[in-house]
Image 1: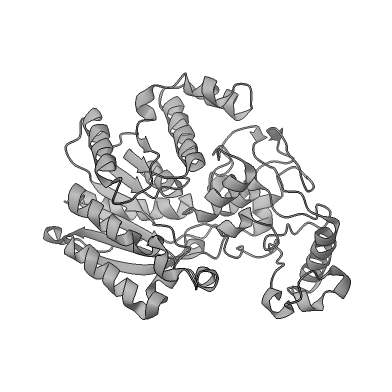
Image 2 (image 1 turned 90 degrees about the vertical axis):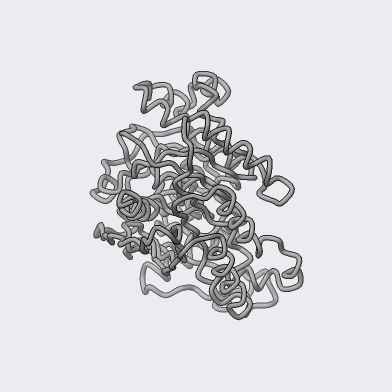
Length: 416
């Protein structure tokens, strides 16, 4: 693929946003991400694309199947593919160093300008649940003001356009003051901008996931918020799960063969992409108490489509005295519905909100199942321990959604 439009990804996470843009024909100048495991995830994906572009995918498959370790795999990939990954915290203190490294990467790729900045600062501070857990420390939470750093990058790099992603709660946070200031700050950097609340379910993702997508362009360009093509792949969550091998709690498996052929949805979404084995189909352990609750929750949902309430459990299964605060603590992923409820990073702490609908498996969803709900392809490897993989997945922008946004951005840039 001839990739001519470049981008920088700030607060890149596991690079779900980048994945969508790469598929649309963009190429990365830099990814900036502070978490070391997420940074390795980005490097591994960069190495994957290097293998694809150079017809040596067999090398990636050897790593994917555990035949070689990461160090051995990386040794076969030129360093310049990894130099795009800047494993640093975005801060005023690190700003100059990050800009320096972005410029070095840009020059190494023979580019004079950056076409696009994409990224979404951490959203926990703005989310409704985040506000509840962060009341006492709100004023000291520097994440609230990351948009000012984002604007600083815009002023310095001067890309043609930008994409800023976050949770809808950003709009109402602090009675709208922060959102108003954000728009004024980005506008003062020299950009016209517009925003929409988009749902990932409108773009082929089997998940109810609403996000605010702010798109901006240099004021002198006279562009507009791109037209985004919605799509429905006419599937249910079971179409996303049923080809995966049956496993129980605390399963730590090497890549294993799929149990059945790919469903139409898995083919259309390209989640299944020609590999014979699935990786990271691993689950967390559960105690007997939780498993009994899971069983009851699954039975109630599958039989009556009713969510179990914590207050409905017998006292012998309740470990929290404050019952009202845990009413929706346990939630089954709705297998017969067209989408799952929103997947969030809290899945790294426990799986109670993401119980597998198959009572014979009676567990929370695996890393790979979570990745599929976010529309990541099966050959996408999340580096780090299981908890980090869940965090990376829960924080990500679904690649299918990102790809549609990228195509819209591409049309606008091509019009210049």
